[in-house]
Image (tube, rainbow, N blue to C red; front, side, top):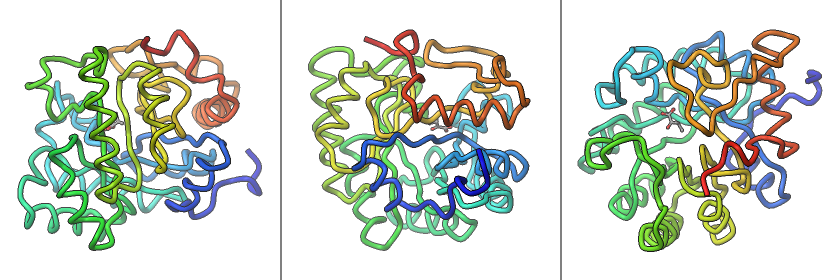
Length: 270
Ligand code: KIV
């Protein structure tokens, strides 16, 4: 990508405009300054400091051990390397269990450099979403497969496969938009359900394992570089076809999201 076309200071309104115009946007997880710079220079609109760092960086088998201190450290690192992408920061497990705790922790992430906070859940995070949004903190609500609830869900399974569960996701997504969420992230749901939610909502919907019809796509950085120990169905290794190493792989990912060649049918759940 030429330096003229690199994204500069992406905001929620940039994503709203892309969503309204039908242009897809790309998001990737980032955990340090070096990769943050490569990713934002390659045109990735959104960098997510995800609590997936507990698995891909720290070697845990879930995201549950990740602490606020871990998140603050990595948000500060990513902020230093970021060159204008929107920075979303995860509120980790049990860091938004009470109102006071939510406000304190969200404020810490914003002071560290986050532009948006992400939290996982459905109807039960509606009041938390409202609390944050009314105080000027943009919220990305994460639905579908929510890894912080892995012990309740019972495994990293596709969500919303049956009619009742799909209807609940649709209704709760609308509830979260109504509560003031600026973005919705849908993880591991059937393509048709993700399409329906995206069509029904006004806010941009970011998908992972949710098919090509959402407003944007997100992937874990280690997955697009093919260095994760497991390869779920929705993952593609972009380093394999890169002629310019890691920057080339990231540019190919951005292009594939924009021209709709990723995710392909083989990456979707039906
Ligand atoms: O923590 C994370 O990296 C995430 C992505 C899987 C979307 O939430």
